[in-house]
Length: 301
Image (cartoon, rainbow, N blue to C red; front, side, top):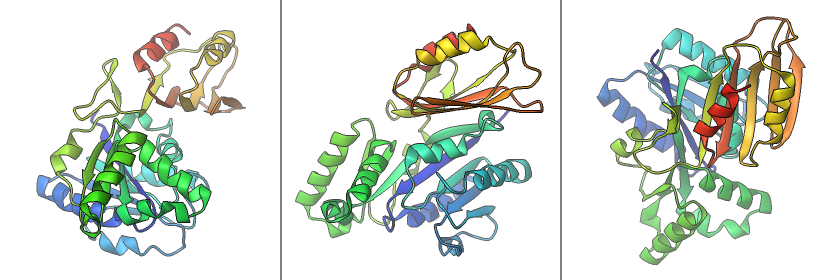
């Protein structure tokens, strides 16, 4: 089954994400691929959606952040896009306040995660804003760092406003935070499109592969073929590394008629009983995880 590629466009407010989206849509159109766009705005009226051509399927997520208040809405919008439009690629433009881990967690629903190929997170950094970040609140400073730390490609945007010394300083600082990412100085979010096409962060054929770099944040979907032992699953959870940030999905224990909805967030597991058959998929999100080893352990449950 052909999977739909997904790219997350991350970065603080006003950094140039919408300009980047327009640039990417032009390239995709030239390649003849079917594109869909998800746009997340904090307010109830989307300004940026006016920038997207009418012939491109667009779903808007208004009135909240994709990673907290409107997760359920995102799941519904994504599912309808996959069923109705069957796009080759989906671009999700997040609000400037979105955290990359939470955003990826929202996208990877166990209902359809096996139909998506998570290609990567492109973080757009406003060069001047980065230099002045110490003037902002501690929480905003931390968010800017998190967006950089989890990006697979970092665009230092608005380079035309920077001196050569400032460009070198920002590049050094970003690469110190995230040495694995491909870092590029840009104006108007213009980037070499083929660099983007080479990104792969999906677990495939027992390896995590990429033609750009070893990506830190990555995801893995495990489909269970049968019921499992509750005791073995509990032991499996106790051995999880700290770099597993999220797990969610459906598992069915031997003694139960229906699956349980299982959620795990930064070390805290939560189980809820379902009263209907659900796809037995578990979605994992982590950093620097050996997914081959994880798969082997799950095979033994």
